[in-house]
Amino acid sequence: MACVCYLGAMRIREATRSDRDAINSIYSSAFPQGEVESVAEVAINLLSESTVPRTFSLVAETEGALVGHVGFSPVSLGTDGTRQGYILAPLAVRPGNQNCGIGTELVKEGMRQLTAMGIDMLFVYGDPRYYARYGFSDIEARPYTPPYELEYPFGWQGIALGARGEEGAPVKIGCVSSLCHPTLW
Image 1: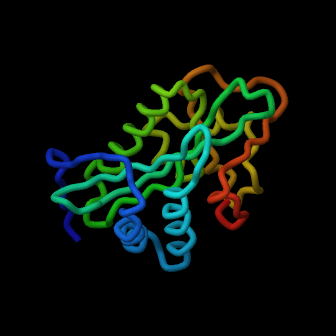
Image 2: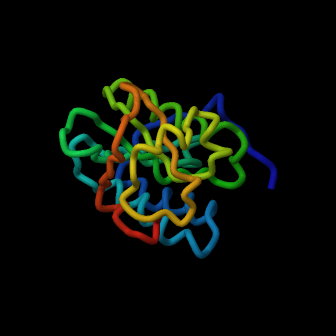
Image 3: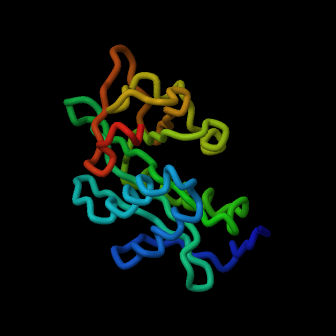
């Protein structure tokens, strides 16, 4: 399928509950059958998460159609509450719109918003080759233990947006209820 790039006319905005069907459609087209149900469910459930700090999702829209989505949700970093973190999950772009920079713009806009919010760390569990372009690394994530055992430990990565990472003993992170399923990890 040919890439349909509309970056000039693309608009990134915060997702709303009325975007549920379009977001589900993005994931249905972008993920293989064995994964699509659980990943789409996470994306949809994040729209209803009520957290402090807030959970938010961004969508990319071109010519009135949603072509990409990314979710950002808070994670706890230890018990003292002095540091704040988020996790980027999930991310998808319609196959016909991939390799056009849409995912990149969604991630960068999310990172801009998190930096403006004073967030210290951003985590992701995904392909290191893809996420390295944003500055994610396994080195930044090492001091932080994900909430569940990872099927692919090399995919656990982080980036310091504010204060530098932890030193010393590992810090176990906690996540929002939409991500509290061992099969996602």
